[in-house]
Image 1: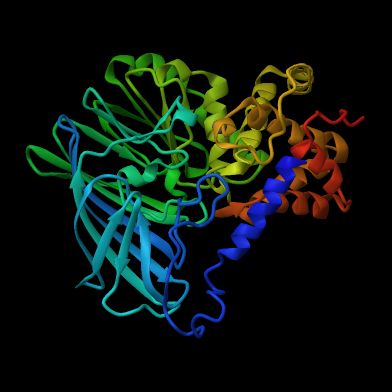
Image 2: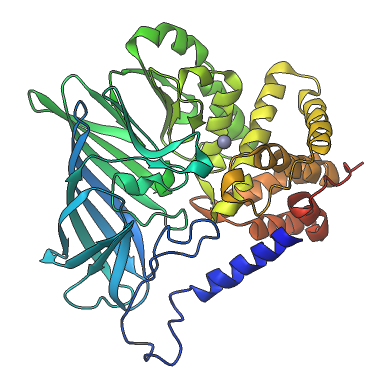
Length: 466
Ligand SMILES: [Zn+2]
């Protein structure tokens, strides 16, 4: 009950933050105002900004991996969503040396994670404008005590660089509208000293030999949330195999482990086929993992290129991160207290793959065992989680149970139809728990609101549907 109240509060807060409305009785609607320094996320209110929508990021970075120095320019093509007098980007640390808008110098100011930019003249609503930020420094990952297992953002360990930003770390290495509600496409042009190799999201479009240095050009052609942007720099071998329907499977492995890892990840293409038939075509052009030469304690579904620690090289985890490419990456949560919309789906789809491999009633049997555990341990509900429980059992296991309960309630045929409809409707965008429930109601032709709310928000586990 208390969590539901928090959630209602979020809806009101977000409604209050909509940029179109503008402050009442302060200025006529045509007057340009500043965008807000946050989108009002219930957990991270300062992540993201309002007043504009980024369409494309071009990150032109020169990286000295040994010294962990980054010097770059970020070029953002954006659309103003209101008459805009000033706006913010999120950037934590780093030195900003210059900002231009449409090639004209713009004023800028720093405060915490907010980079406030004032164009020489206000931007009209609907204007497409280009912002260039020149910056440099040593990126420092975010160490959030509530999420102690991950240092968010740009990490350098012994000269190997990897980026794992969920939820807020993107702003440690580039200026960004740092919330999933503003997805964009990306070009990465990253120059490193030989013999470092650079992997990033999307497709490797070019390698430019500069002698002692090499530039890698990567293109992420489909929209991507900022927390899913990644770069890995180090000693990696690219292992490429053709996958189903033209999807290229390319992994980046440490040279000493290539043989073992090639075997461990050999059925990735079959998994792509399995999920494609279950849901829809794989949403991107390529897929693979980048394996760190040291343990991380987690794997992350960074778009088209999941980041792994070697201790996570397991079939179930591979299936989990791959499933996220559909649910989490192509269809993304719209607020950080709804991680179950990412993790519940990936956990459930991971078990569907394992059931496909192992046969029998692996999934249902396992789900019922988890049901007992969740009941005994009084695991809290998956909806409206707090910062410390963003990646808790509540989200993974009770999140997966929301889907299993729905499947048991409406039957397999309608459930698969629901899964495909939900995916098709929200692909390349973001989704809320409300959207989830509305889609289930629509596909089933039944009002399942109370039923699903109980599974998502009730403290105790509801009874298993017969
Ligand atoms: Zn996951």
